[in-house]
Length: 412
Length: 129
Image 1 (cartoon, chains in turn blue, red):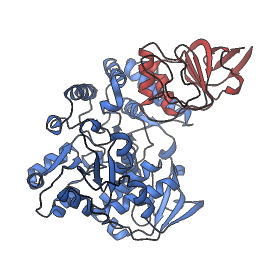
Image 2 (cartoon, rainbow over the protein chains, first blue to last red; image 1 turned 180 degrees about the horizontal axis):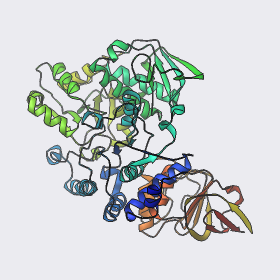
Image 3 (cartoon, each protein chain N blue to C red; image 1 turned 90 degrees about the vertical axis):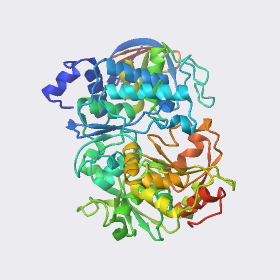
Image 4 (tube, chains in turn green, cyan; image 1 turned 180 degrees about the vertical axis):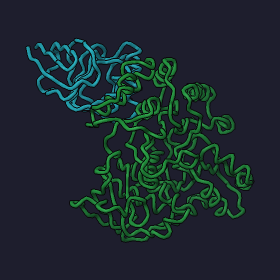
């Protein structure tokens, strides 16, 4: 691999052990994947933030790296933490866990990374332009950056995204190169796909077929997906594909920025037809129970439009069971300024910031059965939180919040 | 004595007794960080100590947290002396780099048996049966 004299000097320790270690990681990954050189990045998204996933070892590692002088040199955002950093006590989280989580946050802050704590960095100002190279972890954000924004990133792990942020570069391989951005699979969608949960169910089905390849989807409502509401639908679609498969980039005819590029579909692309979303719904419904004790929106983290939609569906009715909308803290603050937050809270809803149910220690809170319209959350919650799941349309889930009962399917 | 050659992932020199796994390894959840013992019951290495061994396996698998788990083993003194893979994956590779564990890949691991004395030195792997 060809390094510039400056890059070589970092590898030899010219700027200290912390930077040297970061360069060693970036160069090693480049060597493993056959990169010829490094490419400068404009931003990074770092995963491995929840203490639940990091443990004491991860925290120690980050502390040591920070003490060796590791500081990020590009704008860097953080994945969700293990709890709401401000309201954790009221939500019932453990004080000891909260203290450990705060040490993680402080360590990242010392490296120059503010506690954005969201899986939707693109909703809070980390918004790369088309063609920009970035180093992002968090599979749903990787998918959004590549597919919807047309930026370029591989699926980075926690340490590798941080290493890239520290040296301001990543190895040029995989999705940084045109040749790997072409679709290897055409997905013909021949059934109606309307609600948020429909898009999630579709994503689960496509991800299983595609695994880690690049799909090109046809047959979706391009006009609707190109409106603002489309961003929330694409967010859940991409997250689902990245959960059931390892899809880091997809194209949708007439919608995503690279879909109209010449030769975007590889000549030997296979073709798959999807005629029914029911198997996707079936795969995500893990519960027979009719008693609901939690309803969750916001996986990936909700936009303000999604919060507004939940309030609209509540239509003035009060929640009977906890209704959580997880979102970035800065968007929660914005909702508080516009009065949206107060309207939601008056109906008994909670906006939970900084975290999500997949990375929080939910097992301590006693929830048994939840309803969610978010496919990625439904996919991971049973294993990661020990909570049984009903997955259906936003409307069906809001009805569950109002009644405390699962009234059956509104989405199929 | 056999001399094998691989590709350096983490440069270094170390030797020890080989512990060979035919199955991929995840350091997250599979190895007890306090003792270095393999706790995943269904794994071929279940019950084995990996500390101080030259650990030989085809490739890594699983969560990105695995890099941190390997680091924790190293801090507790239970890390393998060296790692040899057929084809390295980024999670174990990053774990070896941040933990300072010599690692090579692209090695014909079928030439190494559990119990062999193995020395890793840069890209060189010397095996004594």
